[in-house]
Length: 113
Image (cartoon, rainbow, N blue to C red; front, side):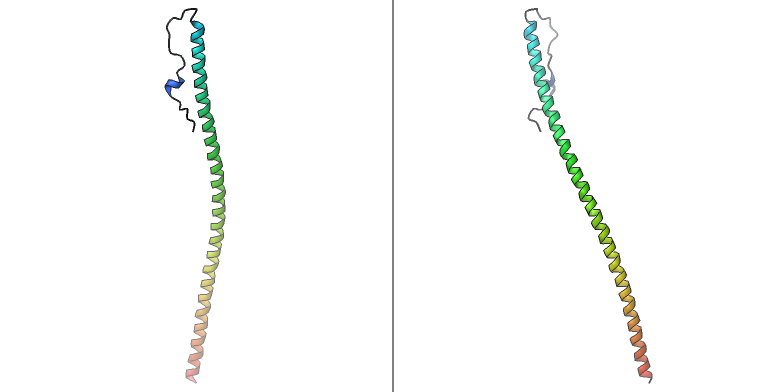
């Protein structure tokens, strides 16, 4: 941020309504012009700093949006993989139950003979 902070005092370029003699008008106009230039410089520095900050924030927002897209893609892939693992677990549990039932049936048949 600019070292030149905008204050009411710095932006105040005209300080009097007193009557100015013809001979002092040039000096007063020069004084006013110098103050106005200082105020314009302070304003320009602050505006330029604000533009830089806005550009930096926009760039950061674009980076964050890209990161969020990547995270969303990864989450979607993770969900698919988790669903696949759950289905495999369910199928394996079912297969184990069938094998256990078959073994139990064979064991029962052998004990009956």
